[in-house]
Length: 442
Ligand code: S3P
Image (cartoon, rainbow, N blue to C red; front, side, top):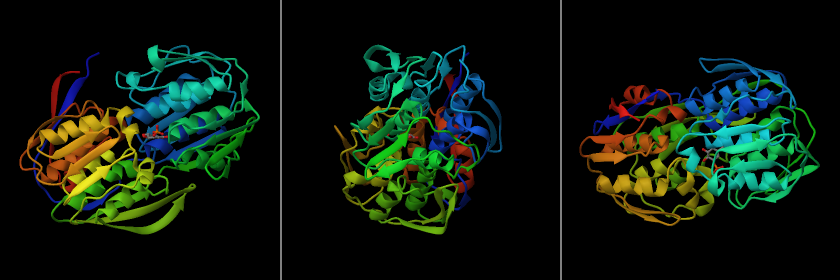
């Protein structure tokens, strides 16, 4: 099957205004399927992200015998099979572009009685999996990887897992979650200590499903052998998708934007903190809590941004937002310096190199470093950039169009669908004109 590749052509300028509700949170959507499937009883999900990444998770659990209705308008009903009720999939579990699916599911699959094999697309097949196979092996899991610890992951079932006391070598919520999920199947108390706070959706949702998780400082702790109870999950709008509009409405010359029902879990709000330090005008309205996750509406008005040194402790809390933060920096007065962000090199693309190349193509003074970037704000020109199949890079350059001197062509934007279905239509509603062009088959 050949999939035609989509390029974007972004018309320069535009005002950003109105009210938007961006699609559901990707991290929460993945976890709602995983925990819903492993729970006893039914789970009713609303606001589910109907993007390719979370749909791949959903398809995998269907393949393991879980009955799942939907999604329809963000509604999904999962008939949980209990922690030990999954069935052997009978074929590879393909997770496409999704690192979260592969790393979290590896933890779950390590505890099953059956063998399984996780595979992904070309981008995911280049991403490191040693970070999950290492602690899982220490727990007694038996896993074969491709060369150099890369996917696919062949997981041999029927192992007895032991609890582990694990210090994460990097600030990664995916690795933390993988070990905690495996910990449910392990004998004893699993402890995971993080070097810096990372998103805590797994811990919150486990608790919401009635599985006790304790926290002692930087350590999350759970006891194996518990059970999950199905219930309702209301997925907030994804702050990582809202991020494009936070920057867009800040750098657009005029307009005012209200982003509705955005998840503002403090382990995700690094983007708000960073943009506010840069001088952005963002207010949180109507703060509330839905299903254990804090939510607010975010009002954004245009502002003159200034360059800053981004505090390193904010980096894990904004880890997915750097492509668009770099665009904000390109529009800011003075220099923005990012350090301590080497993790960006192993995302859906090498986001330091790919963003630096694209910004340079547009005439921006962007200097990549081993663990970050130095950007001097100024003029954004016109030109052609390559997203390298990275959804967030593609959307970041679309936002740059608001301040560009001429059209920006962005190559390879098909994967925007992994996290933000309907992005182009929503951009049109907000005031940013993007033309989609189908190119040669990918
Ligand atoms: C995610 C964690 C982050 C993030 C990814 C989603 C999650 O990855 O980049 O998009 O849902 O746990 P790391 O934990 O590897 O930094």
